[in-house]
Length: 168
Image (cartoon, rainbow, N blue to C red; front, side, top):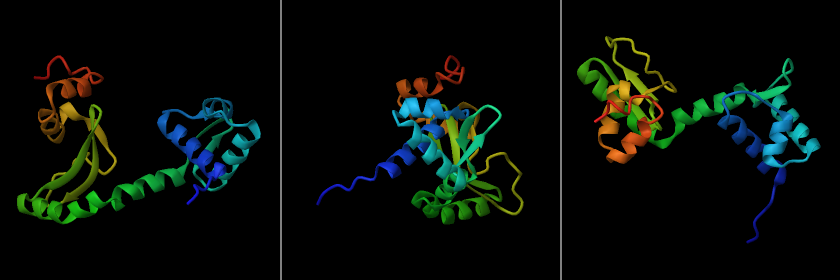
């Protein structure tokens, strides 16, 4: 079976990946340069992405960033991924048992990323909603995860947080 090639789809995904890896909107020229795309292809793909809501164009500084459709897709992933779905019942049971909150989180560099949260009726309100990132060293979940890492990995995870000197 031969591999089907769809350059427009591949380049569209490359643009979205680039925009999601940079914290600020960037120019079409930078997108074109970093991805080695023809100028016309870059603008045609950006126009289509903008029309569909995956990219937003900021005319005041001629840059492009991720749009609401990209955010919605990412948010949908966090609720549809198998681990989140499997964890819902145990999280509900745990939150009910302690009359508090249950969280599913993962370590992402030096941060904890909350993937799911369930609160019982009387739970204290926290800032740990789905999608929130907090310093791993400053949360109970993060400290537990860091404690189980090999020491070199824990130090590497904390090297960007400024807390690595006080850890362990």
